[in-house]
Image 1 (cartoon, rainbow, N blue to C red):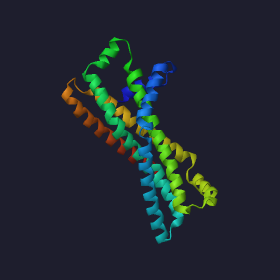
Image 2: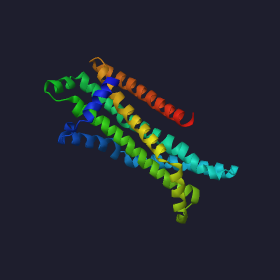
Image 3: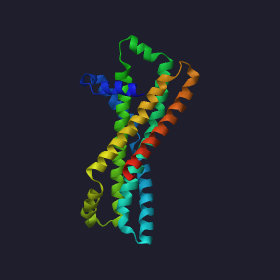
Image 4: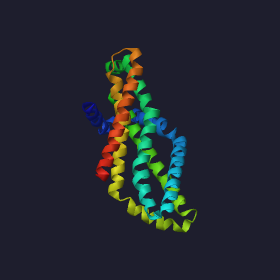
Length: 240
């Protein structure tokens, strides 16, 4: 897996990789992974954010701890839960599809046909899917965080827009550059996990058609464990 990832990174950082065909494939991957799913994902994330923020605000007011609500929103919802939900959404929507596509191409000898035709599958099949997946997880996470910030303002202050500058200043203090960079790095790792692991798993199976569902199941289990491992490591770095 590490060797495969390093080879893919070598292809991704080469300027010669990005000809018109490669750019079109990357755009297509981002469109199918993120743009098509954007309305339903935003609605999904906003509903969850609104419900959790309402619970936090209500419980904190009952306990006289309203001043801790913004920190709780940032520490739990923005930096932990929403990136995790974005990764799971992309994994279930696109990770399984990538695993199935690559496994079928491998079983049907399409990968071998590409190599015989001197078409690099790393450049035109693997790398665009990984870049599209990482970009999609980053985009969905960023938009869900922005939506949650707006929902949090309404949940804390209501529709009193005069408090917006105070709210923005408070969130700027709670979201330093180091924390934002940590969320970005974790989100990139999520994106790599939900694309790179299904790709490699699809290429590992013997060339038997009946083993494709087994490869998909195996790949998604690996993705799940990788996402949990990244999240646990993030929590350990932040709080231990």
